[in-house]
Image 1: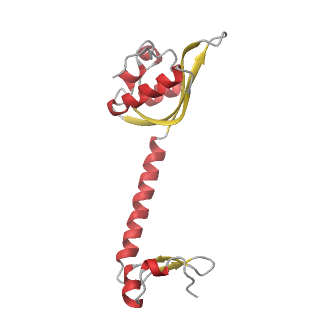
Image 2: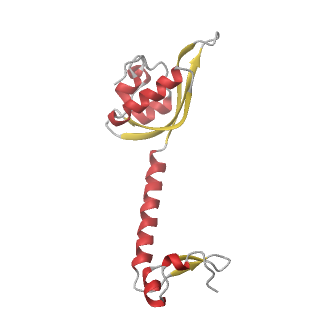
Image 3: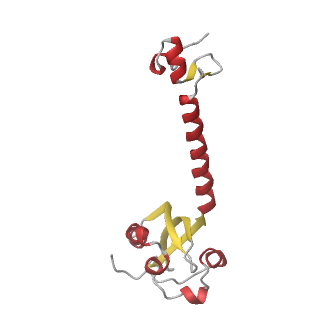
Amino acid sequence: TPKMGGKVTEWNNKATEISGYTKDETLGKVMVEHFVAPENRESSYRVFKDAIAGGGTDNFEMCIVSKSGDRYTVLLNATTRRDRKGQCTGVVGVGQDITQLNKVLSESKRVADDLMRLIETANAPIFGIDIHGNVTEWNAKASQLLGYSKDETMGKNLV
């Protein structure tokens, strides 16, 4: 694990709400070691190191572990924090809790996968066409009954 400063110098109300840690409990603690899930620490160190070097990272997903042990996915933007002379003084990290969004996306993908399996394994021919009459879906039963494979029909005009 890379060693570097990375001590918390700011902690807002939303960070407290997500993590369960008060500002007083976090100030002076090393962010990555104390609040980031172990499997995300190495990549998180790289993001903060890049920001300190003058770079920045947009839309980095990292897992924060709360005081109660709950895990939250945070979409982080990290950039260099500079003083009036332009000297690096640290990193500013702005994050958004996307835990619920990820759960909804995961559930949506599961439902879509289930529906695709249902279509493919149905005991009836199922096909789909777009507004131009071109085939967009063709299940195994349609192939069996009509003699055309999915590859032969996809994108072809049905009407």
